[in-house]
Image (cartoon, rainbow over all chains, first blue to last red; front, side, top):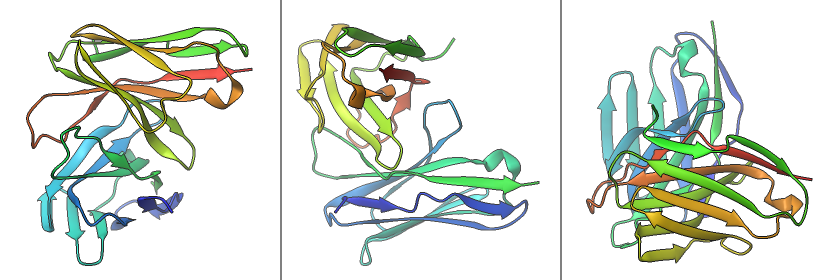
Length: 113
Length: 114
């Protein structure tokens, strides 16, 4: 069983829809949670970063962490065609001197005009 | 210019050949990483380095070696390439702040081993 599970998609939505992307994990020591966005033929770039539980909002994006369920989500409001990309969740324990991230396999999102 | 530059961007080689992928960065970060990305498997860590004298194996280091020639340069070598090393390889950097989570990635090197 992978430490981090993520539905590969693809997820296809019309422009303006609310998108929900999710990851589940098995390691209760994970404390730092990140979402990276990867456009085709590009490297991943950090989109959202949260520590421990709760919500964090940045413009149209909201990251949510539910540690009791070992479940994290990324919501995209008013989705745009430019949001079409692969979204990777990533996480790591707090007490980890190597700061290695464990990545999900990514969900491919397509926003149709 | 990109902050994290990888060369070559694409490479096709044959089984048994030695291959080197190079990475250079202008971000001034101490920490550098090599990942490979495969469909359905996500990003997996091959090697990481905290400084020129500190190199560590990641989860899938077998068949790979690295060299940290300078703070800004980190190379990945495949001594004898095999077809299952066909993948997209990424170099990444981060600063040394304990809480900082952000990795800065290069644009990737696509390697095909025939």
